[in-house]
Length: 466
Image (cartoon, rainbow, N blue to C red; front, side, top):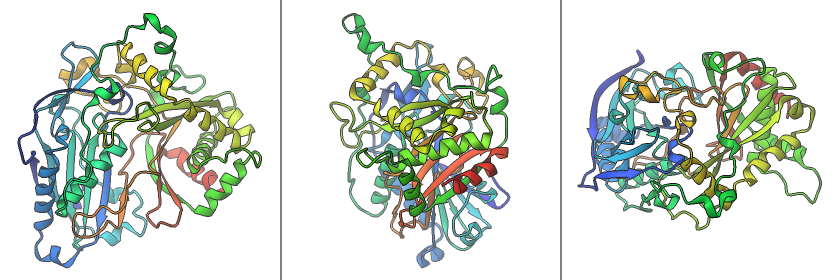
């Protein structure tokens, strides 16, 4: 913990009622990409009654969390490697529970400034995950509530990406908040991952070889720097984080600059911003013109597949694709060219392509090369066979994840809505998240992690090349 933060206690919260115990198969999408934990942090001003009863907030959160874990019982379980000794994971619904941390801070909310920009003040507010433990001992959900000297609080929620994507995570948090307010469950989670063929063996491909075994380039290793044989050196470089706000008018200016003609379908905010971020990263990194570069894009497929996923599907339902180009091509051509690359990648995600990707992964005997679970850490002896670096999406690549359509704001546990919510601190070079500004004025915020030497040049191009 940071010297400004003191831990008061740590407990385990379990479901309030008996829940099903057993093994749930994970879908192929649950088991590839970043399957470490993803943090979200909320800040709240202090209502008067909190000051008179300092323990009521923690009690309310724990009691409502316990009730929320009844329908969302997988979050109280643990991951484990499949018994066949391979590279696949499964979810053990054993009700081991959720870690709940209570702490105090010497800081005041005003110390974070008006925009709550990431800084060392966040240290100690977001719980760390000990990946040195065997994977079957690591909680899937960790919660930390911190009371500040002014009476305000922060609430950090850290959820394993192997169990829930952004949409599912926010679904859980929203339902938890509703239960804390005394309301009934709004949308029950749909927990059966069999709808994505979780646990099923590969299909018989003899009758439809072309459909099932089409090559999926999104699972290839990302480009590395020209002249290098691996990404080891880039992985070790120090990174920094920034929250970059761009106004509605600036976004509109960028969109206008991507217009090809009056009849073409206009590029969306996401397509435009992702293209802008990609080009700015190439400039900031001073990539040579022949340098291959990739842009990681997450596409929500809940309504893109046939049949659509059931309402409340709880798991990973985002499909990652890679837009590819060269630095020279991106920078010698207009922003609309980069936006067209983004659109082409997104439009690849058809119903047929999605199902063939699942089949592709089912036929992949070793998923370790696609897993980021130990990308930053060493692991324990128990997990030695699974230690690996995983794909690296940093320099010369970048990822832009969109949370523009997710219900991030207005989380009320019964004492009012948050004054700020953010994605926590990103640790990966090239990791970025595009969110709507809490001001509601149409502006956007880019939460970005880059190598230290690249951040200031990126900021320059981000604002000056509009």
